[in-house]
Image 1 (tube, rainbow, N blue to C red):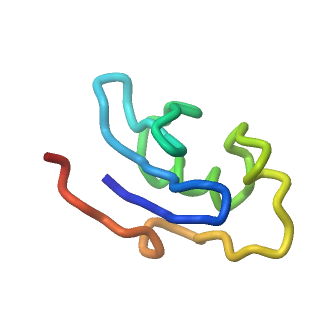
Image 2: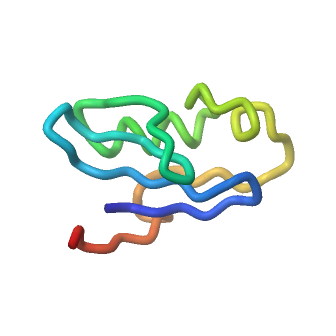
Length: 73
């Protein structure tokens, strides 16, 4: 699982049977075929989560290398 902490919540990308889910504070926002695409949507501000997508002047992670990775338990 990958985590990215922001001022509006913590994003998480994790693998599930449906694909890779993008979550914010435990709420599923969307599903993608790969984790990189989900991370790209956070960078582009196209997650469907208005508090993030409309936020100006914040650092947006360009790819998964800027996310914190932790093995699923």
